[in-house]
Image (cartoon, rainbow, N blue to C red):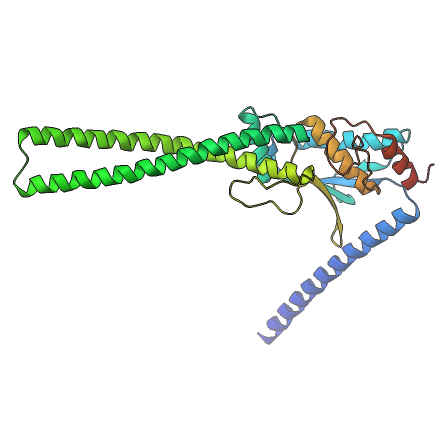
Length: 315
């Protein structure tokens, strides 16, 4: 038994050491890759692989990869086809993920209801007006239903008291019984009406919350100094990004969280791939690398191209 215990401890120790070495080896390799790309920018392509592609987006891995390659081509065409990025099936230096969360959920719900979402100030104002109107109606209806429930409970209590009174006397006369029966039917009808209105109100909650979520997104994206419109007073964080490029000790990744259509998906991917190449934001609102996602095409601005050439030392 002592021998087996010794072997078990050796196995555990080996596993721990292996995990630590793997962790530090990953960090070390990431640091080496960064240093090489800094010393020899654009000399060898940055490889990428697909990670999570959430099926709730309704897009296949092949179609998502096609969108990533469209973003890749945007930068490579600017340098006459230079191979800046390269897809490999596994273990690329950058992992590209499509992650479904409450932001895309809200967007999808609104699109199904016929809401047009434009990420500009005019689009925000339009959605805000719709939210305000819907929220006002929702709150008025909710308050009226609450009042009607209070009245119904009062009248039900009076009805039950009257029934108890006649039962204590051995039963109600024919005319009183008919009166009580009519009151009962009226109470049941009122209860059914309240239940129907409550169900309709519950369905509208989803729309109000979805509008609030998208408005919060646009407030952060457009840097608008206005009150948050999320119905439940919860926010998604200090910033909302349709996508993000992450570079840390664990490696590099691109996470895409939300898009409205194929063109928007390709554009946000081009933006995050630009970060992977080494580009920062610029101040031209028409640029792919502008800090806010306001464009609708993959056309690079003069600022985008100048920054790319500067990074790649091809000026």
